[in-house]
Image 1 (cartoon, rainbow, N blue to C red):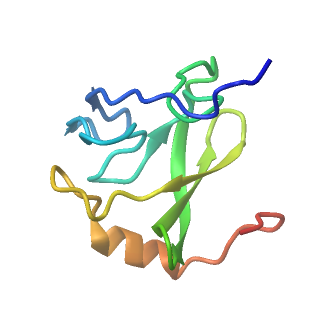
Image 2: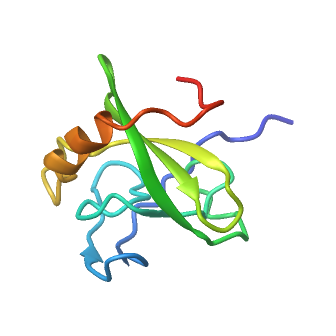
Length: 115
């Protein structure tokens, strides 16, 4: 049986790091705050909200991708898992903070993190 690799779950939320309101993206599942770029370790597969960890995920780096824009690298503060997430810097509603994305691109990738 084939497992669905993406579940659209476009709900707003309050950021667990900065406390600001995050509005739905309108086209796909938003999983990080556009204001501080932090995330919540909530997904096993994008949008499924099936992960029980629920640790805050710190944005530790970002890499530019010619097809996807920026990719944010998050590390869970609770379990240490590393996840990649496409930035929403081009969103019409609450775009990701471009200055924070650029700042993250200057940080080196942690050892063992592959692009």
